[in-house]
Length: 285
Image 1 (cartoon, one colour):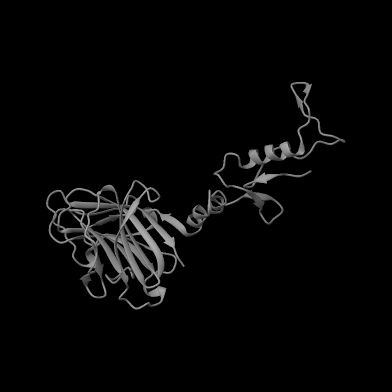
Image 2 (image 1 turned 180 degrees about the horizontal axis):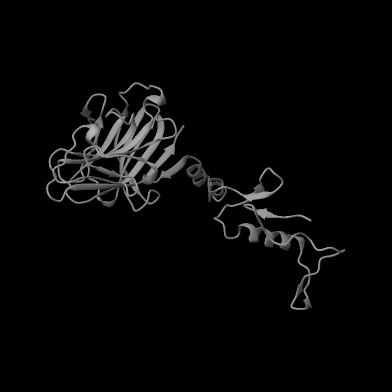
């Protein structure tokens, strides 16, 4: 007798009834037996009908069966080639999965909020409240974007940043893509300690629909701002494209991504805070 299982739990009956045929009985009446195809479809529906789109049944390697993982199911359920590539190479990282460092302010990974209270300032990397995490790929072939919401107290002395390829303990990075208190944006070349010349002027909404996005590929840096409620729905505007001045060292030299908050002067009684969410990383290697 075959015991069918899903995620370790028995599904359906203990096996086919004995005899030379299969007869279904409902409330004392004999029903017409289903076709083999109908039986298979009904069984699969019972196994994975309530699971996410794309879920399939595969061997578990020990003589049983199991549904595909969430990542594989997303790939199998992709509507077209572009969606399949996104499923393979793009991921959204929750801020709760990042490492919080308070600096002289407060960093809260669970909410993505970075803040300074009244009397607190931070003008060096060690001072910045920040969230960091491994990019998990090649920093020389990657695309990263993050959604920004500015809260109380932002001024011309406040700067939120997306850092591509930082070591985590120092200010050094491939680039800091920054947004100021008025929504103005610029890119900071940490190797030369200057703002990148040629960055197209523009402003970023700070109501939670504004995005910073940076791509490093083939020695070329490209920067965008975006407006949208989600990554997929965002309209992007290119702000910069140029060759990187930093030599292409090994990925181990630039293992992390980070979001951080600079505050040059006392923010006053209200303090200052910014929220970063929906960090989206695309592997281009």
